Image 1 (cartoon, rainbow, N blue to C red):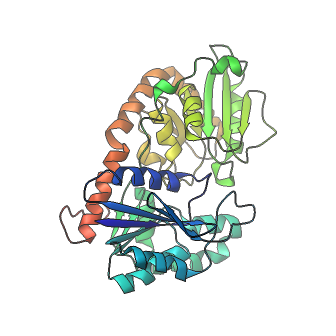
Image 2: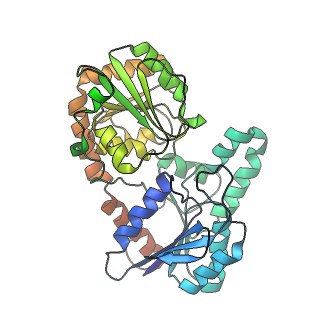
Image 3: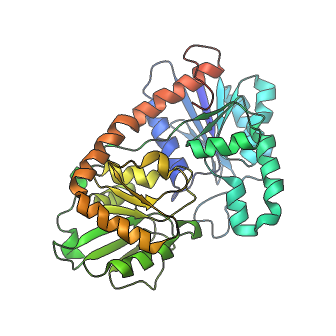
Length: 370
């Protein structure tokens, strides 16, 4: 079986989509009888270890992202590769290139709905474009042989737009990199904190939908006994005295060290399609305080952390206090066990293979929306 993934969501500082594709590429590469090709944008046409770069111009201020403008180069690479199945990882030109190649190759195409496009556009341009974007999503994803969504909330949105054949396919987490053993006992001292200070962490992009202002307000309410570490790009510069900022993208191993050294993850984002950082924290052996919105309600159980009312700093502060009163260490151990059981990448890839076999007409069919 030859599987080809195609996406523009792949850059040096990429988030969940690149993590998913890299993990998938490594694991499929060692499975007998399976070949995996990955098509991503780059400065020129090249190939290394099954990863093909297709020429696409760089986005200004895009932090390494490139935006394909020509369909033909992507379609031509797919035609040369002759895959048995194509998976699409974004809703832009590469998706239409895959559908165009399908007409030539007569192979199934799966669409993975990683991002909530109508919500993203509405956040940036307002409600006036929502109907047009929803119609676009409905048309595009209605063309795929099967559609995968990382959470039930995303699957339900697609179904509500009239898209059929939608299946929930959660992502996974690297259990070796994100591990309690990555803990650095010297981190607190390096931050100027004593051992009794409760250290919280948030890692990711400081984009609007992360609601970082809620975290900062929450920290002001919690006071000196608690400290928050903000890790990532575009972080705020004006922060309370009990907040430390580590600006810019950090490699996974560095983030894993910081997470394993903290006491809990704090996340105020209310629009997450999956929330990979939640799994990374849980895999690091720390519990989570997040909002009861988006995909978080599907991931965070009472055994792994606490959920609170969205956009409510007082409710988040109360949830943090309750978490520590309940025993954050025990909750962290339970969180690690939870992701080991349900979100190991090997488990995810085996589930993906069942989807692939199903659309290719072989064994292991699944129930829609299941």
